[in-house]
Length: 231
Image (cartoon, rainbow, N blue to C red; front, side, top):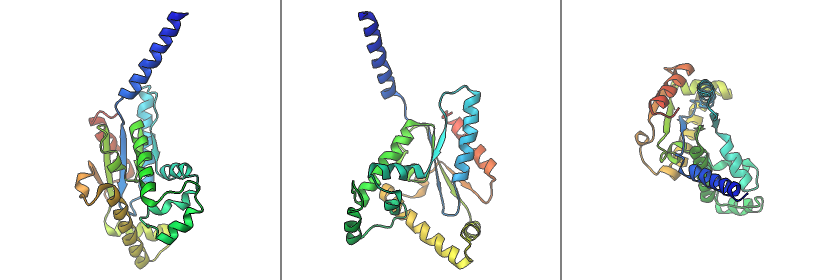
């Protein structure tokens, strides 16, 4: 009986040690210019990676996340995601807005606290591994992970304008205005996590959505991940 107990405790200690020693990742982050939608690429990429995992009889499945970060932050604050979604749009609240919202959130937090909570959640996902993170400053928050690949999707203005016009049923002038507003909001959001460092320091791979098909982009990302021994 004593030997069985000792073996059990020894196995528990060994497993706990293995978990603490496990290298974080792998993680792929996808950033994008507004109008270069990344969710479709993330979905196709996770499907492709899981096909490779199945062939290798792997135990872990890749998944992609985006809005899950906001949902988890909202749950931690016991509030509706809409109450804190403004931080992703870089719409800082005024003092009066802070006071008003303080009474509607059970676990109230100011904007910097919400952003730090988001940072914690994104890092947890990244370190657990087998995850594709769309936006959410993932390229900054996961940069400490050795097995990581940081991708940026770009496109010419014409491509972005046409996509915004079609998706939101806008005329060209309104689409251009929307793109400028969202580009500035995302710069402000990223500045909180990365300061004013140039994009060239953030990304390993930059892909042009106007020049590459979805399949070509997925294959390119997978090839880079394989070269880095992430799969």
